[in-house]
Length: 227
Image (tube, rainbow, N blue to C red; front, top):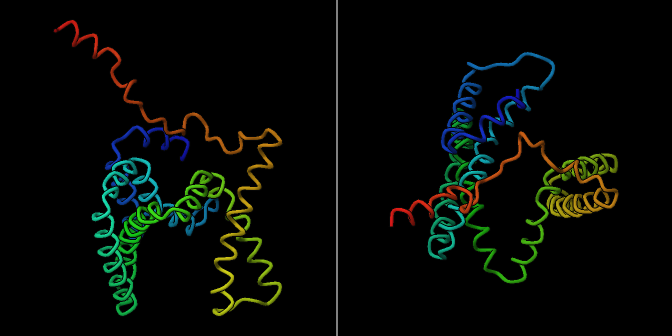
C-alpha cells in the first residue's frame, strides 16, 4: 500500500496531501476506518495518521515557514501565542477528558508552531545555534537510529530498577543525548563500511523538488523571441 500511495502523494498539491491524511485520521478516530489484520498493529496505524500531517507540512511548506519566521517580531509573536494556546489546550484536555482526542490533536498542531518559532529564536543564539545546526545536518540518521538507542537505554533502566519521576527528570535528557550521539556514530560506522544505501530511500519514494532553473528552461528563449 505504501509503495503504491507514496509516489502518488508526493506529486499532489501539499494541502491536498495533508487533507487526505487529516480525513483518514478523522475516520480512524471516529471508528469508521478500521484494520483488523495481523500485519500492522492498530497503534502503529494511529501513530502514522497522527504524525503524517506534520511530516507532510514540513515537506511542502518548510521554506515558507522559515521565511515567515525570519522576522524576529513574527517569531516572538508566534512563540508567545502558540505557547499560550498550547498551555490552554493541555489544561482543557486535562479538565475535560471527553475532549481529550480533539484538543490533543489541536495541541499537536499548535505545538509544532511553537517548536518552529522556538527553532527560529535558537538560530539567533550563536553557540546554541551552531550546536543545533550540527544536529540538524545529521537529522536523517538521528531520526532513523534514535529509537534503537532509546529502547536499549529503556531496557537497561528497567533492569537496574531506576524508573521513576525523579530519575526520569535526569535520565530523559541523558537518554536523548545518548540517542543522538549513538545514531551519529552508527551512521559513521555504516558509512565506513560503505553501506550508505541503508539511509537512501528508494527512487520511487524520494522527493525531488524542482529547481527554479529547471522549471521552464525554454522561457528565456521565448521571451527573447517575443522581444
